[in-house]
Image (cartoon, rainbow, N blue to C red):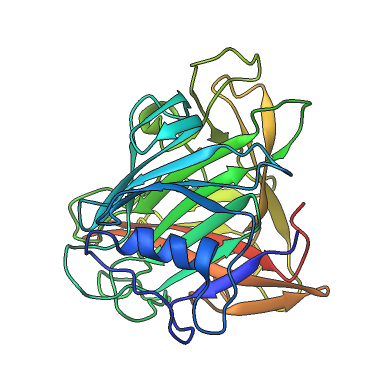
Length: 329
């Protein structure tokens, strides 16, 4: 399936901000109703919603996928509380939770009406929502990294992954963000990748990325996912400035990428691949402008850099590439 792409700068696009209900509105417009000249993805349904439209349960197409459910509680303002379920019977009830505790998605750096740049890419059974939640404009990473120029990224994923085994539970939920860029935290990209290019949902971050069952299929056994380190990536630390970034060739038109694969808790059972998402095997040169598009070898990608900053001590850095115009299945 080729994904549909929705952006904050489309005509009549929904606004995402730190107001309760803005995430529900965005997901409804992109997945269910459409807006302006943008048609909805199709295949998704909104199974339940409260009167205020601050809580809702969404479902991917059950005819071609698992049909598992996503519950979003968007009553908190700058973040939403989320979980996946195998079965949802009403707005607040269901079975087969993906995570033993709900996980938070930060859609805004603060409560309030300030709009945040976002991009949602979706098929009938899977979506990514990228949000630069600290700024009203496009953040850019440059060589002289400081607290004033950073890409503060939140990433929300939900839906059916590309499975490596014959299983019926190949659905995943993930939320994560790099730090608030206040200097108060370590700058890792929590729940996305434990910078620099480590694991996702590992021992210290359990629950950020979860599946409803382990490969054994035991019911009511939510399982965290661990993103595998991309091959060929070397973690580098400049001992003088303590900057962290991956070492690799600069992007000059020839692109090296790695699929985003993940295993369950044991790290021995590879469960599958996140569709359409890649790690570039490059240094950050040439790949630092958010929402920029690059083309290489006849394939097109949107660039999503993320950077965490703590005083002048160190910077932690990761890049995601989202393939567009190609079949994700």
